[in-house]
Length: 463
Image (cartoon, one colour):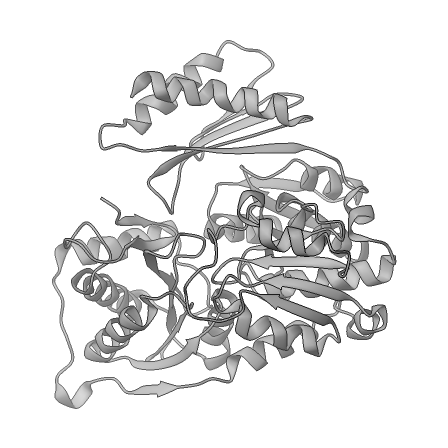
């Protein structure tokens, strides 16, 4: 089964049997359930739902089904076309809509797609609200509008420009400083919507750029997750010495990774760290990231006199915790930057503008900037699930392994994280793929990999 229902939305591979994949019938079911939830429980009263999508090959089909279903329920649809996830989030708020649906499977390969569900604030539904949507879908007690109350359809292509304007208005984005730095950057937009909006942003910032994989056709040039193993093309381009910075985004442009001027990875974990360091140096406050993110954010936050808090994995979990502790910046170690002054959503455009401003003001090379941060090494492993895998039993076994270790702090709010004074390891079931993620961090990659492999062996022994 490849249909995954979680706080990250309804995600699955295209085609196949109903109930097991993301197919037209299931798209109708979950879209209807979401629309009925918004009507019963939502705070908006505009009767409008925003729909945006990335450039996936299946996106046109999914968009047509989603829009038609929303109209059938009686909602007016604002289709903003090919758009990033953060653009769609902002469009909900800017248009005063009751909610929004983003059609994207984010970093998943091309055969996947998904429905990401937003409330009237343009933020992801909470886990509790998502559970209500799933309950409505399970019962299938649907009611559709009669002919006189069908929704209307409109297209609005203004939100890319409005998103960029919103970024440029941020107090800590210094457009003149960036222009005066005369940066040259290379950007890999994976043949998705980043190829449409990032050239516009960079032009507005006065940055000279070259786009790799810039055609928004959904035919991803490589595995779309912005990890080092997938980015050899842009890394080789950077090694020519012609650029100050490499920029990589995922298909829906909510994740962001940088490459140093010498072709080496800045480290996706350090995207948030570097942006947070700049923000905290200008604004005192607290930060949040998820349990699978580097300790470097904690170190940088405490250096500036703030308090760091960890949240469960998942954007809505991070934003919820950010609101609780009044964090001024937060996000996830996968390259997701959440800056509430703009909005409560991961936004690569915000991250790029803040990073370039910081780099311009410091007047240093990207590799030199990276050297100013605590240097941790994180290993990211995965285990494919089988139908027989008992994830709950595995988590219990892992907790038992470390229960008697006085140096180990066990956190089970999201899978199991074992925190040692000099390293940590986190094992959890993914919200977006049928896998178990095993992330571990230490002072060296060898140490990080060793503790991760120790837990992986526990899983293999129980399968």
